[in-house]
Amino acid sequence: MLLHIPKVLTEAQVAHCRAIMEDAKWVDGRETSGHLAARVKHNRQVDEATPEAREMGNIIVTALERTPLFMAAALPLRVFPPLFNRYEPGMAFGAHVDNAIRELTSSPLRVRTDLSATLFLSRPDEYDGGELVVDDTYGAHSVKLPAGDMILYPATSLHRVNPVTRGVRLASIFWVQSMVRDDGERSLLFDLDMAISRVSEATPDNPGVVALTSCYHNLLRRWADA
Image 1 (cartoon, rainbow, N blue to C red):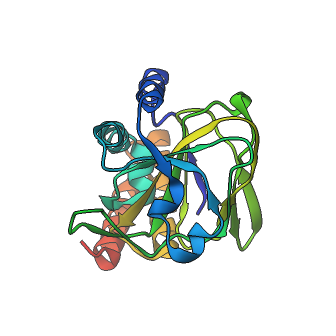
Image 2: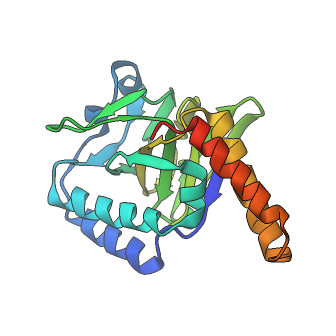
């Protein structure tokens, strides 16, 4: 499931994060990549151990908790602390699959990467190129979203970032360990949740809402790890 989640961050939050990034410590993006991914990765990244990275990450995680569409789609158990990257002209990230397990530096925290997310911090008109391209069974999907919007997709997907040819592309990336690890089961639960919401809005007293909600929670009980 490839899902566009709009307005995760407000304009003010985006502006605040970008102001922080102006004074942040930037390092080679390959420092947080696996061996194979590092061979095709060319970008810059805010040092994840800095207070700036932690402050921006906390802003995003708090915003996610207040975003119903994300909560319904991801069913998050753990969120890996967001990373922040920068692509300038000539920079790109070739085709790769994200590591199955992410480990936080100097911490015992491990996150199984069921879902990958990119939250855009630059406006589309600020740069050319830099599209996130995600491959699935239906082909390649090119993604370039407004600042503050996010794309959520299975971490098993082959994906890449096209070369930036003008301007600067700023974004946050992170991974989610879901309570439901199987993408097919998680997608069914999301579709059912959305259908329940539509029926409930159209006919609030419809007895079918209770029956559908019961099915949803019984399936979640069956499939959830937590």
